[in-house]
Image 1: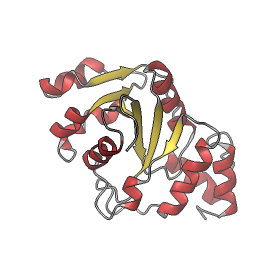
Image 2: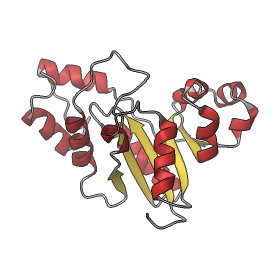
Image 3: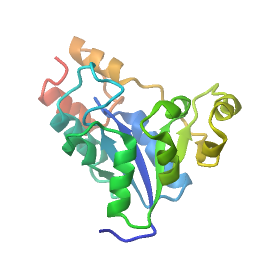
Length: 201
């Protein structure tokens, strides 16, 4: 069990691969919300992408480690990739509160995903367990999305007006597969890992 009273950010995803956009959002949330740490949580068995092929968990975890190496404020949290269960956010949050007793959790996501949160597994429990940090994209209609949420959810949402870099993991995979440059879209350690393992063809 870890010390209580921590403010912990959580950013999840398939991270196939993790890229600069993920790191910018995580760092902006850490700084603006005075978070003690940000945990990167690669999805093990993403329920919303059951038929989509994704890279082996060992590669995705290794890329996260390469991306955050040397940053004491960022950590890899392996709960979802080590669990045989589907990667439901609510399970991850409950596991974190078992480890970090008394911590305040901040779940970081793109604001476009906020509109879908009511379709997630046990969303009522999610908003009880954490604050939702929604990073806004240019042109995002905050009031429209917030108004579509149940009233009981709205107080749990924090909007983050952060510089979102429009980088797509799909595009990075395409570039890697076709031999095009993807330098600067991912941290150098991630670029080297992808090249060394011929990860995307």
